[in-house]
Length: 598
Image (tube, rainbow, N blue to C red; front, side, top):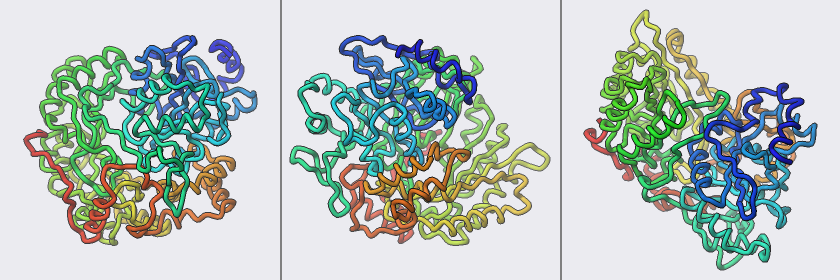
């Protein structure tokens, strides 16, 4: 079916679904390549709604990178909202890419960016709607290869039965290598298994779950030429790495509507709960000149009036002060503001607000995570209350009206005193806004979730009733000061599910499928999360999610992800887990000097 024919088929009901523009494509800066012999069509799938996926930087990178290759057409596809899914099913219409309305089943590759465990069921929705057999074992020569990558790829085992290939690490070099290798191979003469063997043998970083069996909790290769340990791919030269210069401009509202420039990858710190920092090692930064050049190109190509700087710890860029000054100089006269997320709480924090006067005064975001010095040592995030308060006060003085604070409950070794300190500190920050002023603190309290390839991968998560009590304790501790502190606690049921999926093995594939068949859709959205669908799956499969999420593991226990490679070896992670239980700081810290940052 042509693009025009598919749009005509959608026309009778499109205005009956929410935000129909998200299903039409045709946005500014899209690339639509006409079919021709030899053209490899890649569907870049984001297993969440358009509003979320269109703001994802990794998708933008791959879209522009792959479309720059002459024989590759990269197209986008997102998870439909439930009303659109029902409409497609009722009319027998497939899920298609946005650029050419090609059904997923007719693409050569379908790749998913796995960013969040609660999006697992969406992968099945998209495959099924797109006409692709759910199970990798059921696909034949005419079916696309189903790929996955992203943060969730560091433990893809719950989805292993649905995926042909998984990329462990960064994609800018690995994905084009895979495409080139596919072109070299005579796919018509190779069985699907032989093709996968050849790809993982010659393309480092790619993992084919079907080529491994699980023995005593560990994945073991079935063939001698298949790697026992899959190498993590790392782009060593971030300065030369691909970056979108003309990102697609959405036609409907999305999560982040701004130019996004990745200024640094990795993090100089070693917070023990942080998977993103662990698996993105080592720290690599782009130069100020390159960042400004990228920002200008993206501004000219999009017309956005805000530039956001992307990294795990923005103010730890080695030339942060110079960078902000240059961007302010270039964009302030144009009425373009800067967005500075992920600011480090340290002695340099109070100097930042006065330096970035052109920043739109929305929320000034700080993430102490813990509110006592003892617990901060345990999580290896040394934050000084005086630095935090000085930074917040400087932000209020510079015109910010909202301070966003992020904490967690349920961290290893946490006590009631650690929990009680959260509302006390939030109220101290709120008091800095002064009386009678329209200032406030937005306090977000997440539930600690142990993740693979961190020192806390062996830690137990608190039981749901304990987490609920801790969230209630924070709310009660705010007391009268709550009028100046807006509090939001994360859903406990969703957090337990996230932890179970983050730590589960291949045996959880049937659980994900059962939940999907019971109606699990867009579980990361509060309005769509259906705990009963997962409870039905747990009952039908005879599993207990708390047994996976809330059990401390011994350091010699088999880990489902041990055959993949993260940022640190298991020996070093074990040593740091022991230091955490002793309340000692990590030896892994690489802290830049204050002069580097301000």
